[in-house]
Image (tube, rainbow, N blue to C red):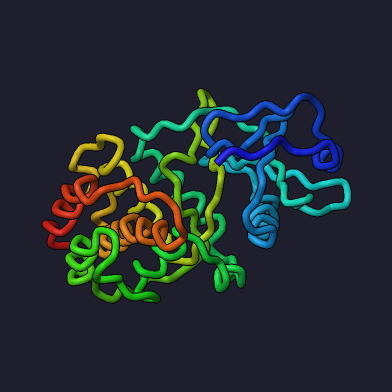
Length: 269
């Protein structure tokens, strides 16, 4: 979905100078203006919460973040837009093991944050998939890829892992640059165990990025790893049903996920 460029009012509010240039990727909604990145936010409350948390993180040798930019009035959102300092680097989905290391460091840094209230009212395909994965919504037995979801649900068992704010889409949102720590960008917020987003990254790498099968055991020494993989698969697969419910095109197929489901379910722990 393409968005119009930020208005002059928005640019002035954030102190952005220069001509807006649309960024490759970013779903056609992200604009580069001078040394800033601007994009429209779906939920101003979530955007402000995320910016506030990112603004308080201390510098780390293990990861960078795209620093949020406040408007002249001190707010984080102007007319539905938010701004961030541009960071150097490029995503590399073949570096999943390094993404998991970044995930460890990032989630340690935000571990003590309480659950944000905006999660109660968020309604989008990804939130639907998340709630199905964590048994807050039932699997639709007649929905998209229902057979795969039923197989995974039969293998799902309770886990006793602490929840915290987590980044739900890390694999393509960690930027690598020479001689600098990796940078974390574009944070979709969930409140789940910190091991779960690592499982999502592994599932994404196995499903879409040609990762070797051995990657399924990347965190196999951690309690609950198989259950996190199962929930990661349910999340990604059920999001397709969420897309259908929200009138969006369903692009993925059961054949895309079948080998990874078989691989995960073949693990004993």
